[in-house]
Length: 412
Ligand code: NAD
Ligand code: 13P
Image (cartoon, rainbow, N blue to C red; front, top):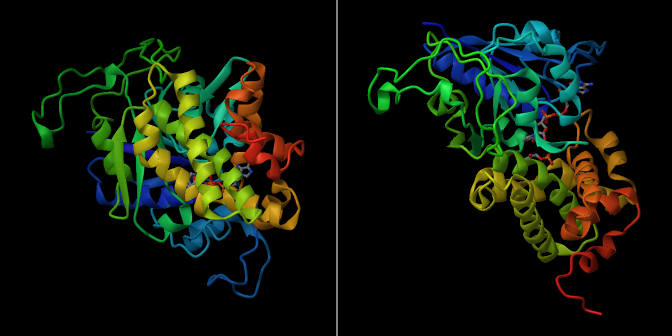
């Protein structure tokens, strides 16, 4: 039997953390996965910081891949955390994805388009993906999830992983939960795994060219899928739980790809608003009000544009919904940068540049993208908090305007 080869496309703060989790599990489950995990690194020259245990007094910049492969640490994006030695940092994207059956997309959403352009036609036709990206893709056609957009571009099926997952806490192996949404095409179906019943596959499909399935909105997908050959272990919920679940990282498997993806994207807009009001010193009640209103707008957005499939419970009950909203409004980077921007009287972009050492915020671009989508449809007024965040970032509104802008009743 063949084993699944796994590639992590991305190696930032979360990309490196997910690589650690996955590599710990491929080491434990050598019957299912190849032990070695490829991690694509956007190559850059990095000087080992003097605070690092690997600093030798010679701070000449070196290739980041070489530092990671020598010291098993991403000293720039996940400093202080030892990575498993079965992670191979690879600067060649095409080489890193070659022959992998599982592709985990984990990089800031602004870079994914170029990555997909480069690997189109260079991956196994029956590969399957998981998107850990928190953002939405807005184009003239409307709004799409990164899972569906990557899937359409590469002609593979892609699910989503999202949750209350501040990377540094998980890298330090502090307990958290996550939600993985995976709703595989029928051609991937097998009998229940031996653990839960018959070891015999119901049916196996070695190759089904031009087969269709339902996308995350319940429509007939445009993606032309190829079935996973039956020599591989089934790529089902059990397989993905085995790949991602750790004692400190508890996985809940669901099928609502749209809800999970939207939760992770839209909460970043709300986290900026929470940072704005905290930066004004308005306290916990104001922040709770932002979270309440933000959650309502998230549910409304899901129902309005992905209503065929999205479940409100994904927003209100899963780690990818309300739990991620709470953690992001407490200690996420979007929250922290927005708060500091208000306190210092500078822009969020300036704080991102000064404080994040190359890490990227997703909330600012998501706020602009969602706003352009809503504006084009005349719907800005239905989403007053999302609209306020966009306007504050652009300087046309002030933080002090928020209570009035989101007021359910006019108190004048
Ligand atoms: P990050 O914020 O650490 O971003 C830095 C990464 O971007 C680095 O790997 C860098 O090499 C890469 N990069 C910079 N320029 C690039 C370019 N031109 N092309 C390609 N890559 C380039 O990234 P992250 O924290 O790993 O976030 C990835 C995704 O995961 C985001 O959508 C984020 O919202 C989500 N996420 C992050 C966290 C977290 O706590 N960091 C938690 C959950 C989800
Ligand atoms: P930030 O990108 O705002 O740090 O949010 C991290 C996150 O997604 C926590 O779940």
